[in-house]
Amino acid sequence: MIMDLVDYTAPADLEGALRALSETPGARPLAGGHRLVLDLKRRARRIPLLVDLGRVPELRGVRRGFGGALEIGAMTTVTELVGHPAVRDSYAHDLLADAAATLPDPQTRNRGTVGGSVVAGTDIAAALIALDAVARIRGRGGRRRTLNVERLLDPAAPGLAAGEVIAAVGVPPGTAQGAHVRQPVPATLDSVCGVAVAVSFHADGTVSACRAAVCGGSRPARRLPVLERALTSGTAAAPPLGDVFPGDEVASGEYRAHLAWVLAGRAVARARERAV
Image (cartoon, rainbow, N blue to C red; front, side, top):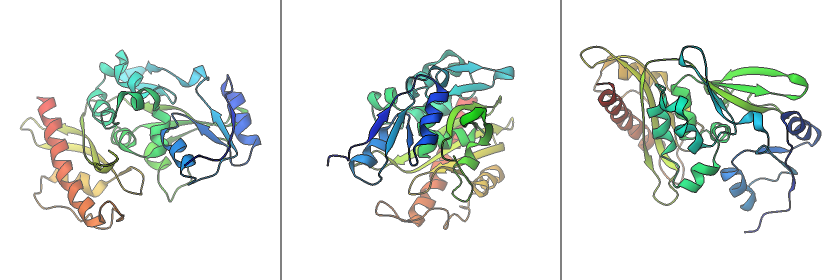
């Protein structure tokens, strides 16, 4: 299917991009564009103007902050993210590399961006939620705000306002060991269910603290405290996750809930192996 004609602009600075977004109702930023362009080709959405952020230099790159914190530009590609020395030397690398590996091919990793992955709410977003990452949001006129990625993707909370973009993602310093495990859809390689964990362990290998996030299905990535409590308690019984996942043509909610518990156990086991 051929998509409808869409106006396009590629400003050279952030203020120009914010101006274009705010002056055209319904305009959307173009980050990696992997999912957005597919939606346009399917005519699943109509957008009057695409504002390409690829020429805005201040949205790219990774910086190491105080205590090992990471500041990741929203237009940093997934390939650049996992290959950057500051990320490779960080406690967050293993988890981010696991999540990056869920993208099916190098071309997608070379084009897909951190900011676009957050907005899409898929595996990389789940990894960032497990790392307690925050989104640095910019609006026109110098407006700035910071919002947890978890909160940004919450359907019940206000997300990005019209004319706003994610400028960067901040990962706080930490020592937890991370891992991400998923079950892909064979036809599309999207995740039926994915689980990201950032775990601290006692000396005997039991879990002392855990952050866990899930993705898959129609809902964006989100944190699951009930799963965290079950993993920390060491219980063998699956926690009540029946209402966490809606069903769709790919899988039922009950099946995804079962997968979440199984994959969480595998993710913790992988993190434990890495922590040794």
